[in-house]
Length: 136
Image 1 (cartoon, rainbow, N blue to C red):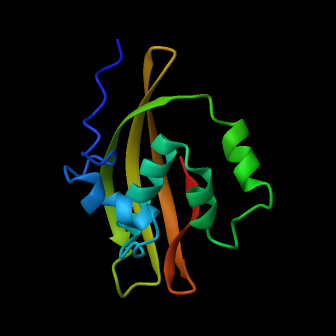
Image 2 (spheres, helix red, strand yellow):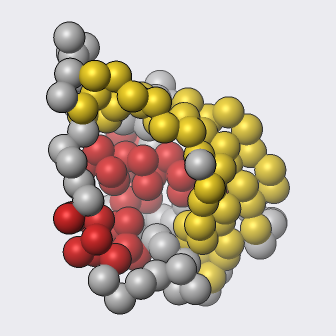
Image 3 (cartoon, rainbow, N blue to C red):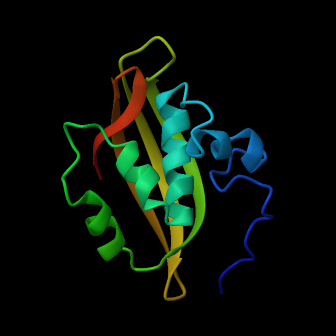
C-alpha cells in the first residue's frame, strides 16, 4: 500500500520545513543552494516534481551529456518518491569547493517499496553548487 502523500506545504526532501522555506526558492532560482546538502535536497525535490530542466541546470558541466534531459525523461519509470534520508556529508559547506553527500531515497514502484543508496559528489562551477557524479 502506498502511504498518503505529504501535505503540499511540506517540502518533499523531508527537512520538516515548508517547501516555500526550503527547496522551493532554490528550484525557482530565487537564490542558489548554499551547501552541497541543500543542492542534494533540491535535486531530490526536483525528481519528485519531474523537473528535468532543474536537474539539467544543476548538473556540473563536466558531467552534463547533451542528451541529459531526454535521458532523465526516458528513464522515468514513474516512481512515487516517499522519502529522503541524509546519512552523512563531507565538506560541501558555504566556503568549500567540493562536497559529498551520502543519502537514501525511498520510492514505491508498482506497489513495491525500494530504497536507493548513493554517494553523490558535488563541485562548484561559476560560484554555484552543482552535481558532479555518484556511485551507488
